Amino acid sequence: MTKIKIGLLILLTVLITFISEAQELKTIDQIHNAYKNKTINAEQLAKKYIKRIKDLDSQYNAVISIEPTALKQAKEIDNKAEKGFWIGPLHGIPVLLKDNIETIGTLPTTAGSLALRNNVTNKDAFVVKKLRDAGAIILGKTNLSEWANFRSSFSSSGWSAIGGQTHNAHDIERNPWGSSSGSAVAIALNFAPVALGTETDGSITSPASVNGIYAIKPSMGQVPRTGTIPLSSSQDTIGPMTHSLNDALKVLSVIQGKDSLDPATTDFKLKPAIIKNKKSLVIGVLPSDQFTAETQKVYAKQVQALKAAGHIPVNITITDKLESLLADEYYTLLYDFKHEINNYLKNTPKEVPVKSLGDLIKFNVKNKSTEMPYFGQNILIKSNRINLEEKQRYSKTKTRYRSAAIKAISNLYRNKVVDIVIAPTTSPAWKIDLINGDSTKANSSSLSAIAGTTHITLPVGNVKHLPIGLSIIADVGGELSAYTYAKIIDDVLSKDTKKPE
Image (cartoon, rainbow, N blue to C red; front, side):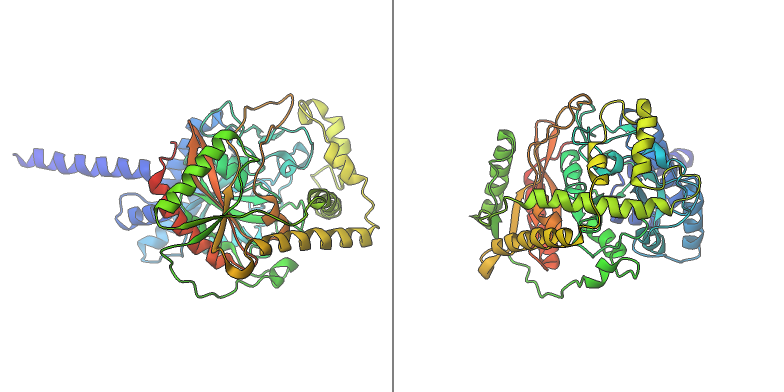
């Protein structure tokens, strides 16, 4: 073989390796290995993701905007790497942010509303500062259910006036759920290795489930919310959405921490725990009768797979009386939203035309053709009618509903009979319906959301081409146990189940 042929063969091998790695890179470890092997650099990777978004996203509406400085950020990271400097655990990792999280620069933070299209705060949210310090590249902003799905009882999840209707990554006729719709779809389509979502009740875990990705809704106070458009300080959290559980945990370890501007973080303590890597877990299996028949079948198969792997499933039920729980939650959210969105809006830049919830309602009426072409704003109106002087009623309601949720979760783990509790996260995605709105079939988010405990969802099953997630519902103060046992469960079920592409 001539030297020319040998040279061409080597070049072809390098090109095939480069193309293969560039196409298949999804996890943080894969990307970091590619950087270290010099098969791709941060600038090339960022360009790859931006091109992929531009090529594909017109079908999905997952991304609202690309950060103009993304390639500049990547170049700076490459320059540091050339000098032998590794920035941190997210070195050169592109991250997409739900568009209710503020960033330095020219991008507005809109919550999907035309009223905030000029909301350029030029400030990084706490979590964004932490991401940058860890070496991440801020790639852009993702679409969401407008006002985090707290505008209308008849809305279509994933729709916003700014971004339009987000479509499910596995079937464009189906809903992506919300409110972190774009973040979930973007990860499923590999528009980035990491995205952040926010959750008040189900807004991280539900879209992650129906789009077939990993996600963590952290415990209340674990991740500061400063610089994020609020819905309810009683329940709002920020969490990672990724291609693997390890990646979600890595990102969570970066963005968590104390923040003097978010009082909830001063109350949170990640309790140290000595956790044995058990070969046989006792797994509390919550009932699935509220979910679709096909979801129940997949769940039963998951439970059998865990049993076959040597774990011990134990059927458990929620025995606490929770009749008033969701009504109490709704009142608390209505109260919080009015109080907190008024405070947020009055401090927005002068270019933002609304400075209160009342202004926002009037803006939507004035711009009805673009803001309310499919559904109205009955939730905003209800929230605006709340009397903020009823502080005693609010305090009593909040204490009652949180105590009830905490007690219900604690009772599932009573006497340490079970190591971890599981449930279906939600049923498969329904058809998008802009006329009638969502047609959800139950989810497992509310107890964890109200109690403020950790909720993890794993992509471990599917009905035909539609993903279904499995929820890991942590005990109160049981974050580290949940992380450890979720890994054990994921190792079993990821081998047993073929995930939809």
